[in-house]
Length: 182
Image 1 (cartoon, one colour):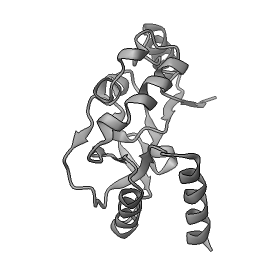
Image 2 (cartoon, helix red, strand yellow):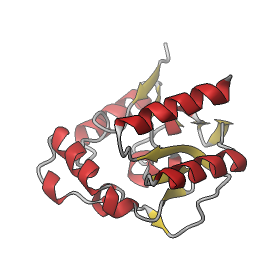
Image 3 (cartoon, helix red, strand yellow):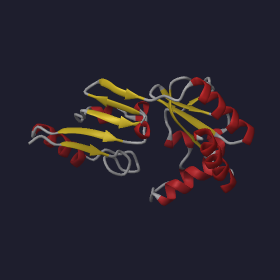
Image 4 (cartoon, helix red, strand yellow):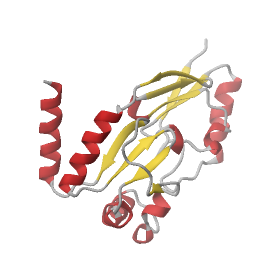
């Protein structure tokens, strides 16, 4: 009986150093050789699913926190943030002085001061994940393909991530989301 296997990427298929263990490669290939289908299910957008992962023999992915679904090279579903929604989000984040990055299948696009302002959060996250060189972690090492200086009003977005300046930013975001749903 054929089974469908879903694997997370970070901390499951690859470690928090970004290494893909040979044991994971063997396991995925063995599952496929036994007639099973293997997909990744990840918060990553397709731009962050590097060729090394595809090369192990994945059948597809659910990515961008569920906004993108691909099966055997065919896009099954892709729910994008509209250009108008993106404008409102980017403007709101700029008004609050919050740094962010926009995720699309075409790349990760950083706000103007993201690299510098993200430094404390990146290092703390790295420490909590047990990274050996957490104090040396930078935006460039954590997001090696981040694009700076690109257009931020985009129509190809899967999701937006941003740095909280305070807990109030979180509360205000929840309130704004609640109002936009009503």
